[in-house]
Length: 193
Image 1 (cartoon, rainbow, N blue to C red):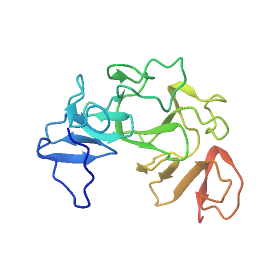
Image 2: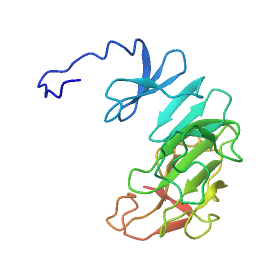
Image 3: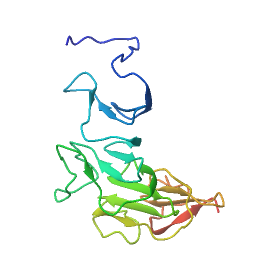
Image 4: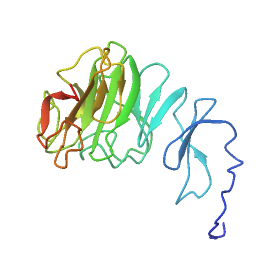
């Protein structure tokens, strides 16, 4: 196609009904995932993914509670991980019953919330991994030790059943909201508690 800048929004007519957007990717109402930008410059379906309910960066949550790494995933992984730069979707090992996925935009770490209220994490945040996750991270998702009965996650932040907010990880600039710049890798700290 022609390379032309536009100051006005343009409708991607080839997508149809979309339920979620994520950085040049979309989940359509039928549960398929579509990607565009660079090559190809028009939306194309990612083969091998169906029944997707949530999409975040290079990971997708399937309706059956499994998590899948998307093709070409250069992040959240080490060279040894099977889902790194894979040409097709790869199911992350050990995750089932997942109801939500998240990613901390400031790290190479992904998180998943299981229906039993536990939080699982994977990837490679070399300095600020949660307790229970090996130094340097892990290809295999690991349970985050600490808060239980979690109802929602957003990056390295979790909402407890009593409304308390738990957070962990890098806090170099006070971004965890704990009132200090301490690092929390041992189960997290309650914000404003």
